[in-house]
Image (cartoon, rainbow, N blue to C red; front, side, top):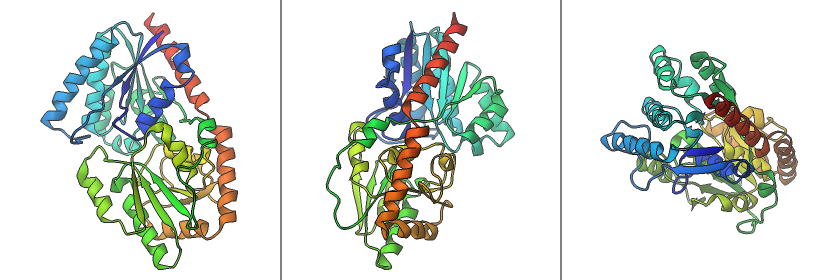
Length: 362
């Protein structure tokens, strides 16, 4: 069947572009005629904000969806699905797809969704906004439960995130490891990802004599350069900003690290954690979203509370001072990824949803 995937790719980076890239280069592309409409744009980021430019872009994107969707049986929209502005944007894109004669699948990736949906008005907004949509996919348990309570369990499907295990397990390092162990962060440059907390923890460790290097890989977040500058201002001389990378370059970035850290304030099921595990890295992460479903505390990594630089520093210290401990946890992380987080499972589940929607369409 013909399927149109709608979302963001380069120049955007992050979980949604990575997941879309995985789908487009998976077996799904040989099973179906996959088209892709990239809604990413250069320029000032205004994600989630009600601005005249965002309104203009949304209507322009809706027209683009309508044109691209003609002849497609399925339109697969990828979105954070929060805050309200983003919900309404998903609604308009879905209406455009339905107007073109397509069934709509919305893939919700945003880890803040379950908290956002607690108010009765927002639940009403979500229910109204999703009426054109045949199925909604949640990638983490709390999001699945929250969406099911609003839309009904028959319309919401849980699909576990997955990664290409072979690619991330066989890459050569981007640059050789030195004597200083290297901590890697991959994600957007924004305080809500806990990057400032990580930099604070790194500073504490250096003051305690725990030598290390902190690599930060990522770019400007949806909320714009103010958030990015808050991260950059907090940096100390041991922080190395490595910029953004193309998806195909990321396995080599992970291969050059000794420890991976994602200290987010909230998440769904972050792909960066799964990529790091597939690369055999021990993970230090905050216990948010479904992270604990991937990272077994004390076995494949260490979990700490969000917004706790002291606890973060303690967990990183344990691994930075003990190469054997890093190897043990990294090996278990790789085994967990092999067992539970293959991209094949996510591809098969998505394929099933396409067939369900197409059967309803016919």
